[in-house]
Length: 285
Image (cartoon, rainbow, N blue to C red; front, side):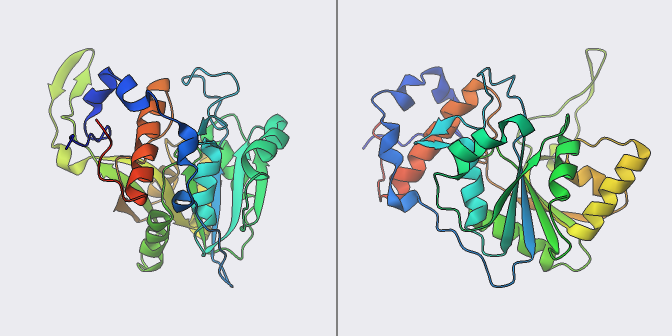
């Protein structure tokens, strides 16, 4: 039997990407076992904000990366469908360039059977402004808000739900961030010289989703705006106020599509999802 190759844990396979993509029909991935079922609970307490406002300059494709397709569905659709399948989410706010809202609806939302209400908010010039723009579409009936990068299409409903429940189940927690432990050796560098090697066990790579209690998240944005503070992610806004943010360990295949090479990783991961859901044990390498 041929050895199964996991490109997430064995990125050396990217030296020969044809092994992953040759004779590969992405339409094959349109399989019912991969389809998520949308649902909304009777009294949902969480609103989702999906950030899709980036220009995709590093990806190098005109029109950005949000509408790039894998298995016949735009990247943004994959992300939004995962939140649609979480019953506690009663609203999905997609933040995208205002001049492209109709295009995003036409290509990524309207052709698919979403159950959760979806609204679009105009993106700002930076991520923090986009998150605040999306927050303005969330009314006070929602106790929690979850932020997610639209370019992370492989997030699962189970991980989203688990992250929400982590915050809900810890009354003294203000939020929770999906992250993954650092696996590379880290170096402290100044002026091109290595100054030290910190213990990597205390370092985690932050991902999304990030879930927060909506009240403190609003206050954190207001304080950041008043102080002129710009954070590197949503959690940093709450951290600076002394808020308690927990970590939820995610998966390494929660990849963000940033550069063209990421597409190969995503495509390979989707292929493995299909084969596993169809009962296949062998990728055929």
